Length: 270
Image 1 (cartoon, rainbow, N blue to C red):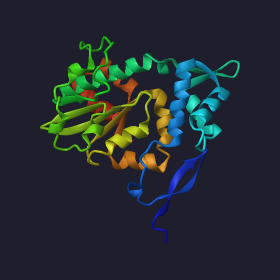
Image 2: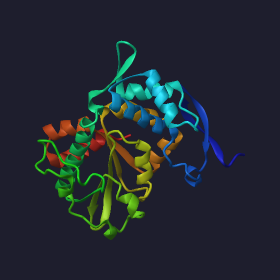
Image 3: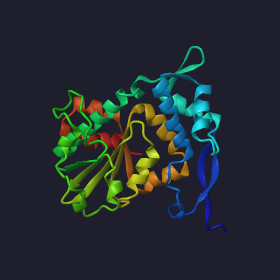
């Protein structure tokens, strides 16, 4: 009997069936690093944001140049990434979706951070926001604060009783805290790698609730990732849930703020 590998349900290039996977993936060195497929996704998005309109050949060349010494992604992976972030237009071009343009996506990321901070405060949690986001300016009529750091009322994460690797913890988008303990780990994935969010979340207790937020335009990408053994295992075992941006906006506009989080979380259960 093979004790290092086992057969798991999976999907590859549109076909479903059994795939060999590690029996104990947690013990495999470097397995948590961002896979090539996700780095290709980031390359595709950067090219779209830089040029606005591209051909498949443009993207193929950009991927080949970015990873010259690696096994490059196949055509289906590149096309999937294009379909996630762009729409096909006349002349064989791909046009970036409006919500993924530079400036727009960053603004929305900051808006979601602000809304989640407001909800956390209303629910009685103290707030810590990662170092990258702290200086971001808030440009929305939903809230009154103007800079993200204004929401932080738990400034010293070294006092946390249930956190390790504080340099990694400081990269988490948001923490909801009570009695010097993290109650929720929150990541807002507008365009960044979903796998990197899982990697950061692995620095916390498995049972600690972790929430991943992303726009509906990334839902197709999320479903595709959930069909891979590594992503599915880490997502499930580390107690992740997801929430769609648009559902958060909808409930924010239509419901009492005290009920938003519970209702949205129920929508996002997987």
